[in-house]
Image 1 (tube, rainbow, N blue to C red):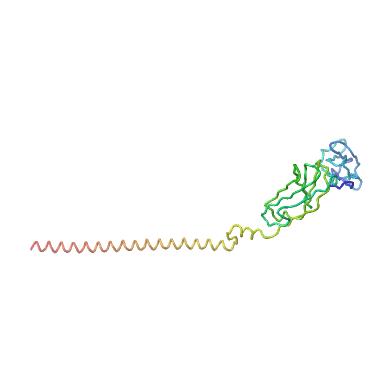
Image 2: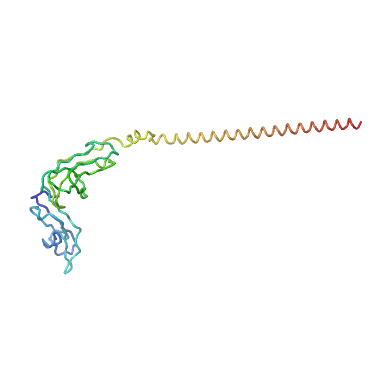
Length: 249
């Protein structure tokens, strides 16, 4: 992003054997430079000043002998300050807890239908929304990585944007672990988990011992019944023997 009227330098890097470089704008040849003596594999193209006619997509090529290279990856130069300044707000507020959802709202009085949200220091392309004003940019659940300063832009053209909005700083405060503990009601400390497992194991061991004692008692009772039955049978045989002897006499 380059402010309206500012100067910008575009560097094109190629092979050390390159003897010439070309800069193409929107697919058309614009500038040509010989290889610089002190910089064997790159050359600088200066664009000054930056205007709506120089905003767009650039690619570069280099030549070794009679052969030209493939085009470079495209570079998008966006000019800002072409329209009014939008207003940016964040809901539920600029200070939230981890895990919450937030929504940035970008409003521009000018009847544009394309909006961009940019985080300062972020190398990737800004978030884009198409629709009527205000444009909503939703994020969440937020983490500390979402902290930072944000600005928004309105646009009629991908490469010509409005003035930036006033900055809005998002703060993500608090401890996500504490928030999880409060919301779930479950113990989250790892020190408590081994205790739970130990208690469960003790319960299982105790239950096993009770079953073992019950089996031993049952076995002892069975043996006792057998002894009583055997003793009663022996006594019955003796009585029969005596009774039989009395009859014989």
